[in-house]
Image (cartoon, rainbow, N blue to C red; front, side, top):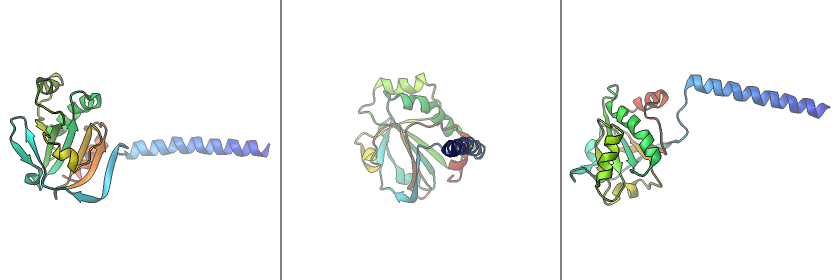
Length: 179
């Protein structure tokens, strides 16, 4: 009998703890759990990729900016899901020093890539390519979507592994600290 009472008390405590902790998290707001924040920002090398017209882009040219470097592919369903919110992030006027690069990791600049953006009604994002996989190697990517967050000093301070809603208010509040 004593053991059963103890079990009931434990279960009641466990239930209440879960309810109240989830309520406090939603009122405080928490970041999505797929954001890995670096304790010490990691410096990145002079990494070059291309825009749609094959013009070279060097990340070092964007020091002083908050950079969102999103890796995606047309065959990736989570990429398709998050791309409209990434486009909205690019349009967000609250960010004064934000640069967003949507980097396609597929081998060639085919019609499907432009169609992908058109079908999703992407307005502001430009398409970039990692032709020689320089960025994939630099950042040791394991899959898509992956988003690298680079601070004004040109250092990776966090990465998002998997998809995210780039319009999430807690994410935006957190990201704005780096703007």
